[in-house]
Picture 1 (tube, rainbow, N blue to C red):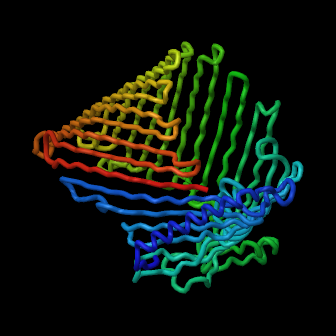
Picture 2 (picture 1 turned 180 degrees about the vertical axis):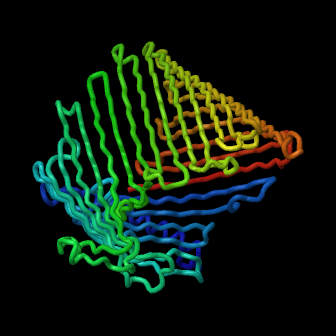
Picture 3 (picture 1 turned 30 degrees about the vertical axis):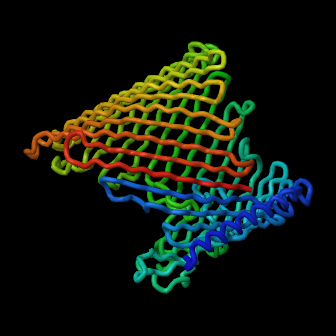
Length: 579
């Protein structure tokens, strides 16, 4: 944070400087032709923008949620010179009382025919469970001549962070370097076979005090195969990652001299007493015909699987899924169905096992060009089974939910007018049962009914009106909630579409009844009503500059029960320029 002594002068200088940058950038925008044919290397390109926002806020009945008045100026400039990319972003705010600036790291990005080279901050993706999007401060090279593929990446994936207590606690972290390679034959979207590997290791000497944090290392190997048959109508894929992971490099080394392990392997990955080998992978088959599609998949992640190149992965789970779709009656009728079942506790050594089953169907029918109908049903079943037979522990549980939805739509084109009518109705049922000593006190079952009706009309002169009403009823053992509301809005475009103005107003009422008889407190009723209004206007001053105004008002009234009435009003005036 930089200290600002003369705020007004700083803002003026800041804005003038940005305008100067924006004006001058227009002169260099024309230098965008590549200096090498079939490459993306250009002498100079720039892009960015800046804006000024003036805001005011007022509240009554509650404390202010933000400052009564504020001024904020922000800007960003991104540029590329012969493949070298960087940028700078600035922010000044009277609310935060200071100027913030961020200089992006310089990076290099260039490609020529089948060669791609990146340096600086890169995020390569070699496999789903191996190296998958981890940010590296280093480099990346890709070569894909013809049917062959070669990729290499390496750099620092984690900076050293010392433990801090006096200025706010921060978890320590070791400096980490990551290297990866991938090679194979074929293309990503067709038949191929790729083999990739990634290696990450922490620098044990990068920090002095780490607390409970331990230095780690990880080696993954991933064969990735895809077979496209019958003109890509049938595709079979397989992706499996074997991970050798060491939790603590300070643990004892395991002697490998008499184990027959090749020396080149131990030089890459030294086994420790805290080292473990695990795997994760998936396989799938997809069939696509003219009016029919079918896909089957299986995924398994072993307990304890860790990859330092993929971030956090949920382990100890397996999932089987099947999906299909069919188009009938000249594509007027479409039917989709999906089924999946998943389970954890794969080794059976945990106290509880969770099984998740889902079934979903969707049917769409186009009666005419103007009338259509969508309907769907979804079933979710979560079963938690415990090894214990002690009922009082209540570790066994079953959750079952059913969701039904019906949505007819009507679109009427009347000369230059377009009418749109949409009706939606749904029913959601949740059953929550404990397999132990289930009582009404532990019953969380509920029913929810909801519906909405929307209508909009668009006129040829850029004027449109939209309205919507909604109604919801929620019932459970302990409470009942009824919500009803609606809103109406209109928008219009002036001055040959240069200015757009929209106005929306809404009313929402909520009634919540809570049964507290089990606590000998009787029934509690709470009823509120909210009135909302929003006005927005945007004017295009010139091709790359705009001015916008927004007004927002919210009033909350307590009709019955405890609480207090309050209201808020907020206004924002924003100027933006881009280049």
